[in-house]
Length: 518
Ligand code: ADP
Ligand code: ZN
Image (cartoon, rainbow, N blue to C red; front, side, top):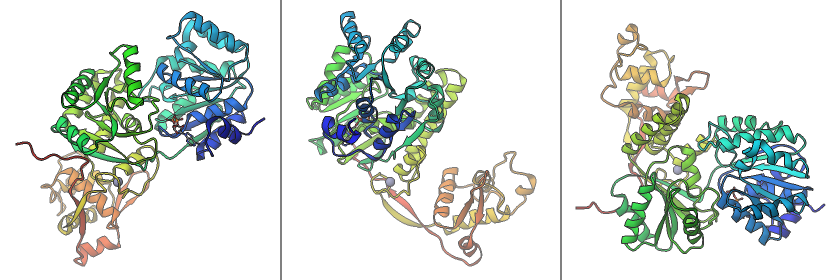
């Protein structure tokens, strides 16, 4: 048996495995169920392709996108690996030929669309029992979960795999899963005591910018002018939006095309191919574009409209800079988009789904509106810690100015003092702002500092609490309920006239700016 590393070098021409690839490969070869969470471009494919070549039998790869399947299979064949696919785009003759190869054990990898597994009461899975299967790989595994952002009913049939093939390892892969989705994938696929591999989601070569959604076309034209050699993707929410923007760009001499699920599959394939082969510079697309598209030199991803959730945003921006070179992600943000997305969320699906979607829109909004390191927010969203100060997001690249926060700090700290350090930030802010809510008791209303912060809004106080905490003027008790506590430094502010100087953004850095249009 050849070693995985030898196979990597011989068939794929790479020197070494990336960190988590090596573990994933090892695990699958040891016939253990494996769950791989890696960002787009992280190198998920090799996690099952290498074991497929090491183990005896045929690997079955379940993948949701027909276009992607063909590309993958072509790429494998070029490397001298016998691979094929089965999906609805093939005629009966082609399908029969593939079945013949499968039965003869001629294939190392077979890519199948999920609907193949659900068709005819699972006929296909039964058929597989007659041949030797090395492993099952479930790509884009988040599609199996209602909690994910791209649920596909056909994926539910994948729970039949473990029942029918208890000895065969399953490897599930996704670039997109928060904790609940992760647990759900493992449950839905019936993974047995899986090894969970989560690689860092950070993409240090991508810079993140959020800009107000104003004169978007003018800004994009300016950006393209300033980056004349760069190619990229612009995401819009609606099909019509992509057509309008692409046409506008074309009228202004930009080599752009649009892509959405409403155009014919032949046309789609062509448009996509032209973009991948650098024949088209700018692709204006809906979210239908991109899953699995391996174009390494995408230099920018622009969101002309707000994405529905952080997962989509991160997956889409992740299509930039797969080659590791500096790239940019620019989001044009408006409250009007938030309203629109919230409306969609309320009419789609049942109550539970709606509230989940609403929560996700809110997180997307928080990301766009907050004043802190964008990368830190993203990493924390995906459950990783990040120190902030990434020096490559609009926030970290901004000019800061210091401001005298002494008076506000005194107000806040003395409120905490008066309330005997027994409450969390929400109550403290309500108290400061003179809220009449039920949580504020009559006793509290009688205290001296009640309502002294009413002239500033909630966000101001939230930010101040954050800043004071970072700078050691406050401490958050990290128990089940967070409670704000005073520190040595806060006592100096309260009782020894210590001054508090904090930093704030003077003007947020922008990826592109245009002179005000007269
Ligand atoms: P994902 O499916 O996670 O988005 P891919 O499997 O398509 O990622 O891999 C992304 C890119 O990284 C591809 O161009 C691939 O050839 C390259 N790549 C993957 N693994 C390695 C490796 N060990 N060494 C060098 N390049 C790699
Ligand atoms: Zn940053």
